[in-house]
Length: 229
Image 1 (cartoon, rainbow, N blue to C red):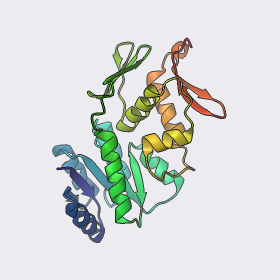
Image 2 (cartoon, rainbow, N blue to C red; image 1 turned 90 degrees about the vertical axis):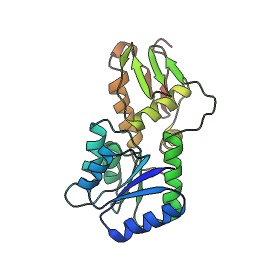
Image 3 (cartoon, helix red, strand yellow; image 1 turned 60 degrees about the horizontal axis):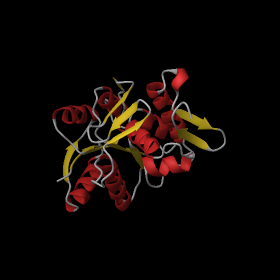
């Protein structure tokens, strides 16, 4: 059974989410504030965290940042009444995997949960577990990446983004392609989150300027290809 942590300080919203998701077969744990949520996320295993941004004590943004800085890669879905692109990007920058603006329809919440679980726990499709481009090596089963034999630490979102590039190496990918395949359904097209995460990846996998793998194709998008090609 899928175990989900819901960190939400509004009792009516928390209980509504728990009731709806429990009826769908999920196991739900509730945390009434950020500090309680942080403690629960540290001491229990969850398959997904649903996290409200606006909470007293420690905000959802702070909680998300703390979990990611501690190496917790559990998928995080942020709930926010703040609909601006800036606030959405801030949450994603902290390591959230997706967002949903309040008020929302329960069917959309459930769809985003399913999408996140599919991305983070994909079914066995027979795809190769070891992917590579030159000396960049990814193990999709162990969730590890290395370059020139040295480990590269990636967040869950960075990992999915890099996997998408490796599986489509030498192909120019535009922002729409990337948003749909890495971030999923109904994403806000005004966000610059793709560019932000491309920069994150470059800092981690392209530290040697003479052997860059991730390139910008002006006016078209991005491409991952061997440095010599």
